[in-house]
Image 1 (cartoon, rainbow, N blue to C red):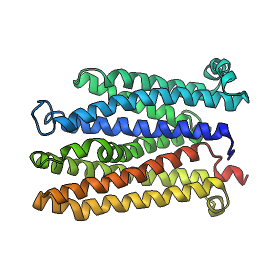
Image 2 (image 1 turned 90 degrees about the horizontal axis):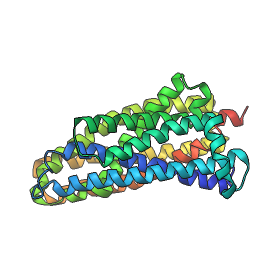
Image 3 (image 1 turned 90 degrees about the vertical axis):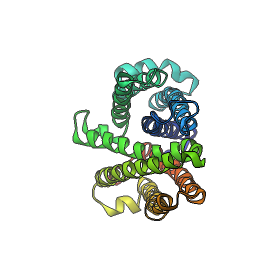
Image 4 (image 1 turned 135 degrees about the vertical axis):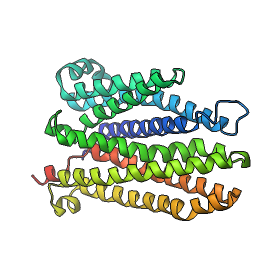
Length: 308
């Protein structure tokens, strides 16, 4: 780990990339779930559907900008140049390094995502949007440590799946807790909130299963199977803190699913609805921390490397 200004800049941009991508994926899911119920301006779900659409567009814009800024910081890191001078190095990085190739894939997907976010809803638009999200995840995975095993490797495929599943879980939490679900607080939207909460919980459960499986693979690969790589390296320390936050987020999600959701279905009360949204709001804050620590891990040498 190099805790200098350049490293902090890289991590900051990577954090924004992670959060923006999660927001985009989560907002796309909410947009699909609420599309039919939110078409009419007088529909109870209209405000929530509109928020999901705006969240997707905003996230796509931020995502593209953050990716561009990340490349500038990465070019400065590779060349050893100061940040302003790194502009001259960017073409070389793009054409002569694996980072440039991977970034081009991710950025190309991000641009398609941006265009799709502003296109009129429809089957073709939705298909292109989800394809862009997948391609972008592949490019982002290739920017990380998984690319060390090669572009056509199981490690890269598993890390791509890890990014998609992590972003799906965190995305429905952050986009829902901070933007979309509060707009379903009215009693007239209670049925939609109940149905959406079930969709959120089911997708989260599936995504969490993939997150845990791929996380174990990445942890074993990064540590080389050595416990000392976890306890004796900065990479390991960050991973342990990230794991603790994931466990906390899992506990919050389990509380919502086991305690709050049955109450919401049974009573459909305002108190239960608020509790469900409030728990997701708190979980969203935790998930942003997880995404930030993921950015730190991506810019820290794995424990197995540090120990030789």
